[in-house]
Image: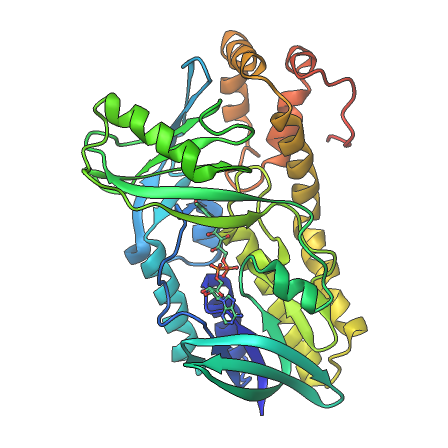
Length: 390
Ligand SMILES: Cc1cc2nc3c(=O)[nH]c(=O)nc-3n(C[C@H](O)[C@H](O)[C@H](O)COP(=O)(O)OP(=O)(O)OC[C@H]3O[C@@H](n4cnc5c(N)ncnc54)[C@H](O)[C@@H]3O)c2cc1C
């Protein structure tokens, strides 16, 4: 019998599998796709803190970033730059493969083209029903790690509850010569969210946006606009999209079970970035599950430590980030333009950039710092901050 079955061979599932295997556990990863990294939809931007904390290898990094241009709806530009690299763009396929290779090296087994269709929890273990090339089978383990990304149906089936909120991201990879910095656009090309251009090589870029409704429609319009400007030289583009949780499900653990990554809603609600928070959540899951396996106590009560642990690390960021996201979604283009004007005119951008705790990965301090400027808060019709600031 396996010590744990990890459902999902995405980056967070593979990372969790590798760390558990390293500790001597017998681990199986079930992946419904034919291979790791197949049809992944992601821009792959992670902060430097993530690169350092998880020793991300240089060979999976396409580009280091130390600057970005932010554009308001009317085209007002805020340029942010620091001397040191603040983030990087990953080759997401190479990153996923590297994570899986790391796990396999320390003994984790993988079965591809295998979808977990149901999970039964028994007195002495877990049975995972697997559908592979039209054949059904059952595989047993002591515990299960749910790492299958945004799959609300499975979460509900397992009694974890659906996601409190989610959005959709759409992206294309296009020829875009001459773009060498990340650009972020706010306004009606991506209502309530934002659109981005992330150059991966001197001639190629990932162009995408987040939207609650019709992401393909909005991205199509924006691409047409960029093509009109002569910035896109690709003849055809292939659009991919994926759902992004903005709030965690009701519960991320159960009897013999922990949930990690997007499946646990470990995603920045401000930007939709889930790689770093997923890896941080996975670290807590590994620690809790390893000790629970050693002690032979896989009860829900024992595994609740996992949820307490990851919420202690990320809970405040998720709460403030989600609150800020809802506040932002209510702003009109006019208000966003006004905030850009105020920030520039009052040197707020420079003050924020100088703050030691400005972080690509932790937005709460910057959000609260920005809203402490009364002139900004007033523009957002904000009367009182519902969070303590330090
Ligand atoms: C357009 C877009 C842009 C993004 N850009 C960024 C970014 O720049 N930075 C960032 O940090 N994040 C970004 N994200 C989010 C990021 O892609 C996710 O947070 C990340 O992939 C989560 O990893 P995961 O391993 O939890 O889930 P996933 O990567 O979704 O992996 C889950 C795996 O589980 C498998 N699976 C699902 N169900 C089953 C099943 N029943 N049985 C077996 N296998 C199953 C899937 O095939 C998949 O391989 C973006 C997302 C989108 C949509």
